[in-house]
Image (tube, rainbow, N blue to C red):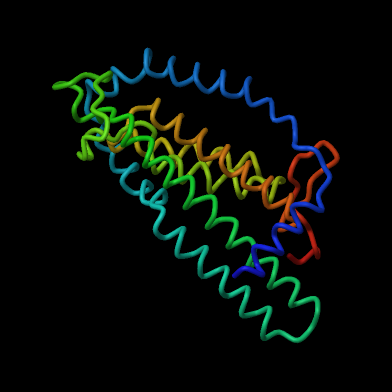
Length: 244
C-alpha cells in the first residue's frame, strides 16, 4: 500500500501543468442564485401539494437509479475485473485496455462514494425539513443533527450521486455530454416527483455532485491516471485505443 501511495505522489509531483481556471466564483454565484430562486418560486407549491399520480409513478420507477449502492458495487466490480484482466491477459494492448477499465471503476467509486458521504454529512448538519413536513414546519424549518430523516432534505443525496455519476461520464465521453446532462436532470428531479425533496434540494445536489466529479478528474489527471491535463489545465479523458 505504501508503494502505491508513493507512486501516486511521484506522479503528482511530475505534473507541471497549472490548475485550470475553473471560474468557481461565477459558478458558485449562479448555483446559489438558482437554489434561492427555486426556494422562492417552486418549493412552496411543491410542498403544499401532492404529486400527480402518474408523475409519482414515473418518479418511483426511475428514482432508484440514484441509489448509490448499486453504483458503488458496479464500480468495485469494474475495478477488480479490470485488474484481473491486466494480470491474466497476454497482449500489451489487451492489458492496457483492462488497466484503463479498472481506473474507470476506481474513478467512479471515488467520486460517487466521497461526494455521497459529504452530501449526507451536509444534509444532516443543515437539517432542512422534507416536503412531507411542509404543513407542520414550512419549507424554511431547520433542525441540525436531529438524527431524523425527516430533517435531511438539503442537499439531496440521490441527486448528488446522480450529478457525480453523469458528470463523470460526461468527462469520460464528452461527445455525449448533452445526453448525460439531460439524464442527470431527469433522474435528479425524480426526487421531486416522489415528494422526497424540494427542487432547490435537487439543484444543490446535482451541482455538488457535478463539481466533485470535475475536481476528482483533475486530481486523477495530475497523477496521470485515466485523464490528462490540457494546456489550460482542464482534464481530458485519455484515449488509448479506438476500441476503448
